[in-house]
Image (cartoon, rainbow, N blue to C red; front, side):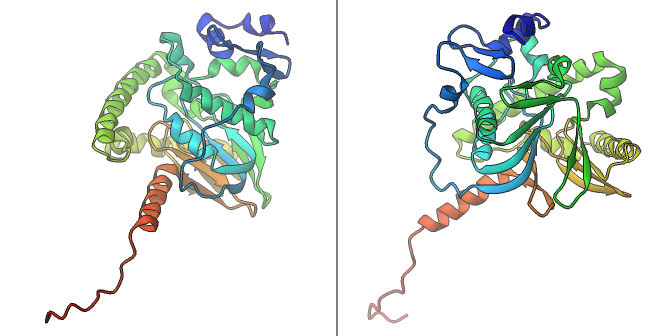
Amino acid sequence: MARAAFASGLDPAQTAFLFGEGGNRVALDGDAAVVSAKGGIASWLDLPEAPDPKGLRPKRRYRTVWISDVHLGTRGCNADMLVSFLRSVETETLYLVGDIIDGWRLKKGWYWPDAHNEVLRRILKMAHRGTRVVFICGNHDEMLRPYAGLTFGGVELLLDAIHTTADGRRLLVVHGDAFDAIVLYHRWLAFLGDKAYELMLRVNTTFNAVRRRMHLPYWSLSAYLKKRVKNAVQFITRYEEAVAHAAAERGVDGVVCGHIHSAEIRQFGAITYYNDGDWVESCTALVEDFAGQMSIIDWLAELKKNAAENFVDKAPVAHEAMPTGVPA
């Protein structure tokens, strides 16, 4: 598909996202993304990167990794933390389970710092080096849904997928907005809720800027409130039940979704419900090892653990005190 044909169905904000604004624009031609006048995507992906942070552990290998709700294009996106996570893992398959790009926000105003480019670069680099990358469209990046079934830059674009685990279980992979009655039946309420959520994230961003100045770690106000507000807890429970019920009707063994920014593994009868969380509030991912075992990675907790271990490693060694001749 030529670039002009691809762009014709998009509004200016969507086209700006896909092709950039001025300078080095990314163009989508057929199945390959190229950087104009820069020798193609391969040379862009092979540009030197910043060195890995000191103390970074050897890469962990997984059969499958799921991430969702990155919300690139918003100030709430923790892009730097996601890049550090992606640099720490190797995986055969990477599922991007929707809301990777926040088209709703980009339509209202352009916000795209270098860190957000780095996320896309890291994902495309993984695809370039042999990782199967599957992009499941969400509601915030719904502008890509008309192109489901196509592949761009080595990234498969789908509405949903069936994943077979190493131990033979079949999992439905879907963003999950179809199970949210507000989004499905009352779209204007979804946009209203998005506005309130955006305001809360702005407060969260300012709050954490102050914490950084005080040398305190990141802490999510929105995640804290979500776990403690009764109505939010009840909604999450009903949502999980609805998703599990739909998975049972599809005849699968489990379901992987995102959408509600709440990482979880739960059993509903014969159906295992997995939610990979988000990279706005909690910074979590879902992973599968080579035996088919699934687990949630809390990247904030991992970073804190690594920092604590590095601090202990660098601490001075305590030596036995020399006798002073002074009675104790």
